[in-house]
Image (cartoon, rainbow over the protein chains, first blue to last red):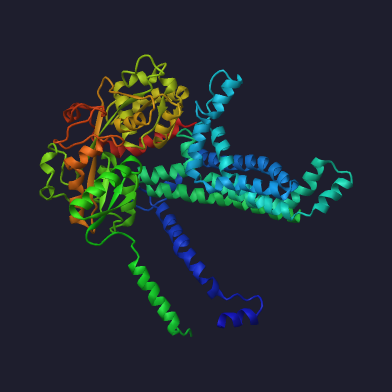
Length: 285
Length: 342
């Protein structure tokens, strides 16, 4: 009763007790492990007997590990770019067709989400392999003389991630696209703007919040996609998730794994913040 | 001041009662929790060992599906409150766990089948349940002659169809050590093989995660790999064109061992579980398709689908000392990462 009185009586004041269960859950299952992780990262040796900055200096003083960070970020950017390029035409098509076709489209878009990411990843092995669907088709059509190496390459990984992450980009985009006022698009066209100009000056700015939500999800998901990265990317492409697994599970160097984990966390956060900043810039700019 | 009503108190009490009754882990009499490798091992132990144990001793097994390295990491992280009673480990992780003091000592007199196992396979802290044999696997439809030695993997036409994997797994580590020996290295010196690996990696069909190798072979992405006979037999059983070759310097063997986790709740049941695992009944069933596990019980007559003809062959194979390998493994993994990656 007290909560209702406070909420009803004094506007703007929040009853913290309503937020307490979630807050405490975060404290126990996110803040506390995060603090432990941070603490472990300041051990100098794998046996965790001596404090020091050795793990941090080793990680950030080595060009190889810096490249791993850059590669992980790059993978996220590639996935966002590829999903964006494919999602916009599809979202525009979704807007243009009737309700029946929309139902079919939404089923096609949601279908991948109903299948486990592990199954989708392994399906991509069958598609991209040397004797897989893509290579067999290219060879049969005479496009290539020898099978292309698509698996174990960054290109192959980006192709697979694009399909795997596509629903995450499309769903927020479709929601925003559906709420867009058609009169604005029509007015732009009536005033003589070309289709491209209308797209870049009207549709794109209006749908930017949806794209930012989608891009955030795709970026966070692609940079942390351990299974797809290790199965399709192979061992020649090292990204932060695989490095963390290797250091914690095989080498048992937990301080170093903690540094890599915190780096991954901040890398993803930086990406998300950049996208958020872009959203604010778009609204004010 | 907050006043707790009778209703809230009852709800809280009920929640507490529910929470305490929740089966977080099997700790009742007649049960145990055992870690098991995902995949064939889980299928085999769930399908053969668990029903046999239930029938003979009325013990229910709850399996915790984890790779060896994950089991050790989980028990280390649990810090004295083990999440399961029994480990199943390869020599590398077993040596690490031994060093970290994660095992209860083994009293062989509690194992009725101990005498059926060759000498040395039951030690102070380990019960061997299976032998693994590692060598070269190739696709006979793609090559007129099979590769003969570890060095052949670095030559044409094999290198162009080779699947490379690093030091993350036991089979990967021991295979690369054997390659290093061919090029002048030793068990503790893999230096000579790195130059060869660097050259090979530009031509190799794939450099992949160990778990991805069978899938890549099945899909024709690779036609040569280093692996264990178990994987070869499973792929062959699925109609894949694959053959196992013992390299000229000999096939490698290592043992998979069962251990009781330090501080385990169900030690007595863990003994019964291990005893059943090494029994002729279970070992005889596990060597057949689709499990293809090499038995260690002397009473078991080997089936023809295995790539060895007698258990005695194991004694002539190449073995490795993991107490020497483990201290260097982290550096090898780092080196492989740095030199083999793009």
